[in-house]
Structures are given as structure tokens and as C-alpha cells.
Length: 223
Image (cartoon, rainbow, N blue to C red; front, side, top):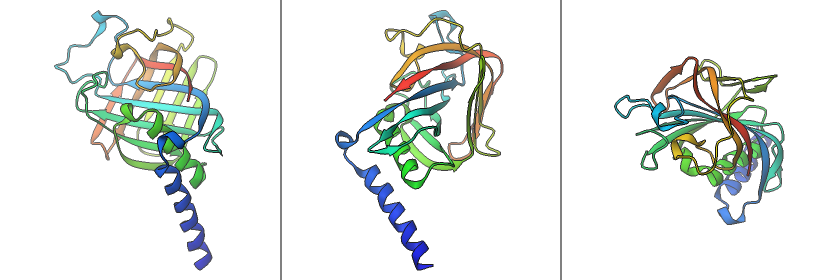
């Protein structure tokens, strides 16, 4: 029992050290796949903005699949982390106060979990806002011919599916904020037609679903 307690204490200490490290001291070199689903249609042109009294686009699901890389020497190859984000206004608005819940791949070790959380706190803090919870769960990020499927947790009803991933022009960095991914570091992003997306997250008090609509970004990322 004492040995087990020591292992837990050492793992917690390692996680704390990585999370508490100054941003400037953290060495991040990670690349992989990215998918993001919004609770509203992504306005590729101004005319497509949904008129719903300012309530559209306040929720999103962001997912990163690490193809390769490391955070302060910790390898994170093949791991996945998913963020559920809820804002006070449309997430494309900088004024939108936001909260988020992170789902970390249950295959990650304590050090890898801390590394992934640190990576997101460092690179996409503006998109995530206040992280209210970090949950270890079964996480899926599966890419087939023209389909990406993402899910996180059991019974959370959080899933994203995007079809036609090769369609649509790349999003330009000069595009309006509402037409760009929320995450930084995303390249070759495209707006594609989602076949089903949504989530239910009690920690944020949000629940939304979306059928077939152009509300999904797919691309790659580099941190």
C-alpha cells in the first residue's frame, strides 16, 4: 500500500511540475490531425451566418490526434485529446467568455496526460477559456477514406462525424474569425459537411446536436 501511494505521489508531482512550468520554458513539437464541429453552420460567406438571436455557435467540439511529437521530452505519439467548449456568445467573438472540459485518451500515462493538458493550455488557451474539468476516457479519432469519426467517453453523447473531407477550399488565414478554426496552429483547414455532430456535457450544462450541415473544420495542426 505504501509503495502504491508513493507511485501515485510521484506521478502527481511530475504532472504538477509540467503544468506549473513557465510557458517560455516548455518545449513543444507536436503535429497531427485536427477536427472541429460547431453548433452552428460555419459562415464561409457572410450571407450564411445563422440569425438566431445571438445564440448560434456558442458550443464546439475540438479534437487533436497526435501523429508524432513531444512536450518537454514526453512522447505523445498516437494519443488523442478532445475539448468540449461552451461560450457566453458565439465562439467566433473574442468577447465570448468560455469554459471547457478536456477528454484525455485513457491510454495516456500520468505524464502524457499532463503533457497534453499543458500543450493545450499553452497553445490554445484563448479558445478553451477556463478548463473546468479534465476527464480520462475512451477516445476515438478514426480517419477512413473520406470520413472522420471522433468520440469521447462512454454515455457522454459526444461525437463528431465529417464526410467529404477533401471537398471545399482551404480556409485562408485572412478569413473572418467566424470562418476560421478556433484552435491556433491549424493548417490546410477546410469547411466540410458534417453528417452528425453534437455533445452533452453536464459539467458545462450544455447539450446540442447537429444533423447534416457545413459546421465542421478538418485539417492538420502543428504546435
